[in-house]
Length: 228
Image (tube, rainbow, N blue to C red):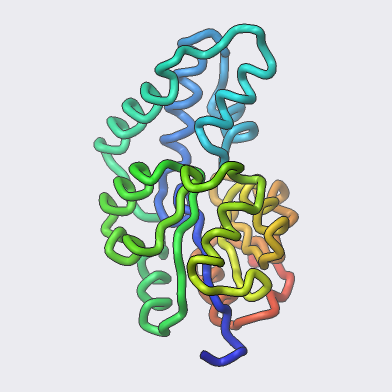
């Protein structure tokens, strides 16, 4: 492989490959509100987006002496998957970008705070799982999830990639922070999250065409914003 190319492209899943962040945060906000923690969709996006469901429990319980129910995580996944069944789509342009990377023989993978089951279910539902079946990494595999760098470093190690020559596509502040901590370049995908909250990324864009252009340009990542 030419040294003008990235060693590895790492995609977050929810909100980057699969248009699921809105649904996930609606479900989470509703469950927390029905328990004892009033939470709006905006609250959920601002506080929890990009992290694992275990991180949600930790944050909520650290701010209250009242624990969440033992079945909180199971209930969340059950209601989330039910919501996904009513309609789930790939992020516009994601399938074309993955096809382009595969055609160019540029290594890529997905590294998500979601469970392995959630990654497989969502990518299968939008027709992308065949591309990622052997290239999927979940927060279940590491002790510390995002914003720690562990998940991204594991993905690079098992893919035989140099972190300094790895580029991450993320839509959450936690993911951007994790990429930086891993010493990786990062493209901030401003879909659900406003671009100003992704300022740690080397570039902030709003379309997959812009993501593809930055990836195909190769390293180093030139800082720019594709937003109007």
